[in-house]
Amino acid sequence: METQDDRLLAAGAPLPPGAVDAGERPPAARVAELVAAGAPVAVTPAPDGPELLAEVAVYAWLGVRHLRVPDPSSRDVRDVLAMVDSVRGTRPPALSVRGLA
Image 1 (tube, rainbow, N blue to C red):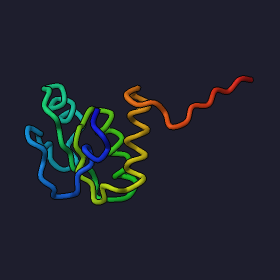
Image 2 (cartoon, one colour):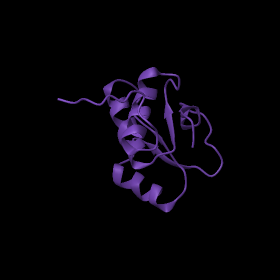
Image 3 (cartoon, rainbow, N blue to C red):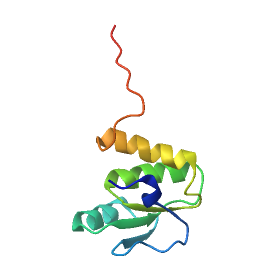
Image 4 (spheres, helix red, strand yellow):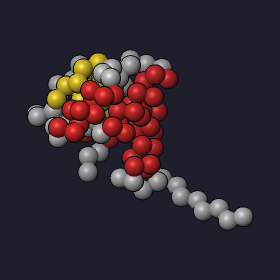
């Protein structure tokens, strides 16, 4: 399994070998096509703000393997990736609470 360090690239960083660049803020349908083709896909989401986090969540859900973001060490972006991975079932949740009424 890839780590977040492997998935998050600095803006303008070179892509890993074999990765397909979907460009900047591509439509979800285009990203889904590229992911379905089987190659690792890279996307550049919005540059900053709430749009960045929303796009990271959508692209991660679609299966994008590499995201070019302004700050790869951003806690918010890493939290979004962790949340998507937990919801998809590819990573255990950081905290699991069972509530009984």
